[in-house]
Length: 453
Image (cartoon, rainbow, N blue to C red; front, side, top):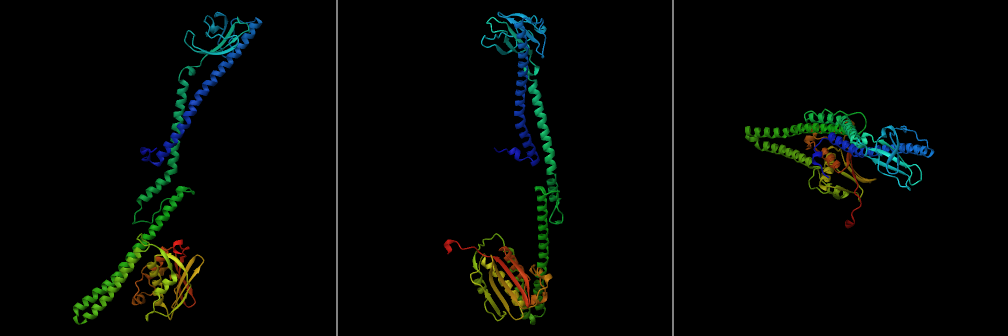
C-alpha cells in the first residue's frame, strides 16, 4: 500500500515511524495478553486459596469441631456454612449476618464448584469455592470467597497497561529518533559540504566518518568523484587555454598575411597562399577537436567485427612522402570496434611514426591471449621516460617548431589514445633499442554468431 505522506518525510522521520509502528505491533498484543494473564492468575490464586479454606472447614464439620466464628485464613474473608434451604449455620466475622454469598448449590455428584457472585449488600463481587461437607444429599455446603480486587472489576489494570504501552512506545520513538539522527549526522555533514562546493572550487572534500560502513564508503566515493571532477575541470580549462593558443596562431597568421597583401599588392599571391596554409591548419585543428568530441559519445556508432590485418592493409597505401614499411601481420585477428574510429587511431600512430622515423617504420600485428596487439615502431629518436605519458595529452609536442612544420596539430596521439580507450583498450609507449614503439592493445572479438558463420 502506497503512503504518499510517508514518502515526503525524511529518512530519519520514516525510520522513527517504522520503529514506533513495530513497537506498537509488539507492545499492544503483549499488553492485552498481559492483562488477560494477570487477571487469570489472580482469579486462579483466589480460587485455590478459597478451596483450601473450604476444605479445612469441611474437615472440621465432619469432626464436629467447627470454630465460631470461623477464622480468616489466606485473605479469604467470606466463609459460610450453609444448610440445605439457604440457612447460614456458621460464618466468619465479615460474613456474619449476611445472606449466603451465592445461590449456586453444588449437586451431589459435583462436590466442588467455583463461582463469581455480586450478591453482597454493597454490590461488591466475590470469587470463591463451594464444597459439600459430606456425600450426604442433605449435607451442608461450605462457601469460601474473597472480594475481587478492584482492578478485576474496573478498567484500572487495562488503563495502567495502556499507559505503560504508550510510555514504552514513546521511549522507542525517542531512542529511534536519537539513534537515527546520530547515524545520519555524517550524511547531513556530507550534504552541507556538497551544497557549498562549486565548479570554481573543487579542491574541497566531504568529511569521512570513521569506520567502513555504508556512510563512510559513500563519503569516500563522493571524494573520489570530486577528485575526478576536479581533474576533468582542470583538464578542460587547460584544454581551453591550449586550444585558444593553438587557434590564435593560425588566425594571427591569416591576419598578418592579409594585412601584408593589402599594404603590398605585388605580394598578394604569396600572402594569399600563406593565408590558405594557415586556414588549412586552422581547419585541421577544428576537425580534430570535433572528432575528439565525438569519440565515446552516444551517437549512432555501432560496433562491428573488424579484421585488423585488413584495416592496417587499407591504411598502408604507398606514397613517396612516407617511410618504407616493414610488415609482420598475423591474419585472423578480429576485434569489435567502430571501424572508422579505429582506422583513424591507427592512422595517427602511423603518421606519427612517419614524421619521426629515420629510415623505416615497422608495423606488426599478433594475437596475445585474449588481446590483439598492434605495434607501430619507428627508428627515430627515443622518447624520454618522463614524457611517455605526457605525449598523449592534447596539444603536447616534444619539439613544437618541428611538429608544426611537419603539419601536426598536436592532437594525433590524444585522438589515438581516446579512441582505443573508448574500445576498452590501451596505447602505450615502449622503448626499443633503435627507436620507439607504440603498442595498441584491444580485446579480441568472441566467436561470430551462427548466422554470420
